[in-house]
Every structure is written in C-alpha cells, then in structure tokens.
Image 1 (tube, helix red, strand yellow):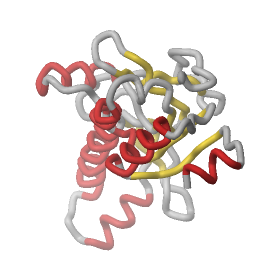
Image 2 (image 1 turned 180 degrees about the vertical axis):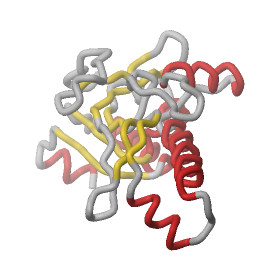
Image 3 (image 1 turned 180 degrees about the horizontal axis):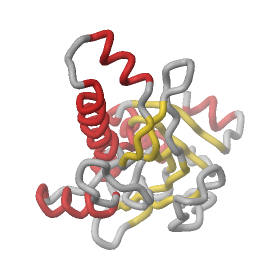
Length: 193
C-alpha cells in the first residue's frame, strides 16, 4: 500500500484506523519515505497516548475531526462548568491529558438526567417521546433531535502539535462552520519531515 501511495505521489491521506494499525502504518510510511503533506486520521487520534506511541515527533502535525475540546464555548447543564473546567479537573484528578471523548461522556449524563427529570417515569414509550422532544444546551452544544431522530453537534478541524504541558496538544485549526469555537493555531502544512 505504501509503495502504491509513493508511486501515485499521494499528498493527502485520510482514514479511520485503530491506534495500533496507525502506529505500524505511520512508522513504516516514514521509514519508506512516504510522508504526505496532510494526514487526517479518525478514531486512532482520539487519545493523546496514540500520538506518544508513534514515537519521537511522528505525531506532530497529524489532523483529525474534533467533536469536542477544551476550547468549545459550552457549559454543562448539570454542573455549570465550562469545557476548559472539565478538562482541567480531569487532568488534575487523573494526572492524564484530556481527550475529545470526555465531553461526550459528560453530555450523555446530562441527557439522561434531563430526560428522566422531564419524563418522571421509566415507561419506555414515555421516555422515547421525551427524548424526541429534547432541546438541551450541553457541554458539547445543543442536543435537539430532528425528524430523522438524530442531533448534530459542532465539528471542527484539529491538529496535534508538540505541546508545552503535554508531549502533544490538540489545537483547533479550522472552524469555518462553527466560528464560535475559536481557532487556536494555524495549520502546519505540509507535515514536518
């Protein structure tokens, strides 16, 4: 695969890999001299530990979609905490770096609490109707289900860069659809070699 990418002069790479597969592929790519100008990888880059597992500077400049970050300007409907507060508390209590899934876990509790409070029952039909009528401002943005029974939340572009506090830190590099989520860095392009 890497030989094919090199032969075709691939400059942009995107995919959804689990962390061990990304580690193997990315290391082999660099050893083979295949370093695309842009690499956007889903799934594997959700946790900072995946960047560290790559070794050295191999994670610097990798990009991903960001569904939630410490930079999102939302508050918890349960605690009133801002995104940055939740990340700071996580890091202080666990001595580990925050990651995007934390916000969605928290929002799940917000949603459950809100639905149970409004439904006042555990009847399945009543709960389904109550969920369908949800319009809740949460740590990940507004949760409001549409006629197709899903809710969209803000999605921005991010890039992992060498950090100050942690080995790699996720920065927001593209917010064109959601300018209320501030950009925190300029995109590194092409990827460092």
